[in-house]
Length: 181
Image (cartoon, rainbow, N blue to C red):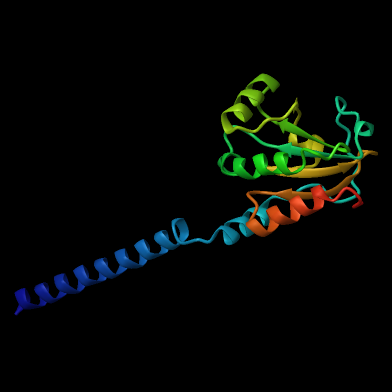
């Protein structure tokens, strides 16, 4: 009789272990592989945010009056969202190439300008201006962050994290609009 009870307990234990394993695997798969980009971006955007509109930025090496608007692109080599966003950065540069009153500056919080230039070159992102500055200098908390600044050095708008397709379109629409302010 005791061996019968032992076998029933052993069988019940094995079934419980298998059920628990299936639950854990399901949770892990959902978190790692089935998460939509928008939910990833939503959690990223709530944990990091860019500077508020109207904030005055002071980057000693940047003369804001050189153009009507300046787009700061804060990136880092060790940021996988930055690397994944490279196709969007190339598109952004291509689609704003004719706009003379806009300049785009890459900001690297950890790398120097030569390391930053090498990283951008690896990504196929061609920018003439590359600066080294801490994220705090542009009011950002993480990379990637895009900050649109007017000629007086005030933040017009900012976007943080790996952008969804809809947010990329929003950025492109805003940046391509020469009469917006």
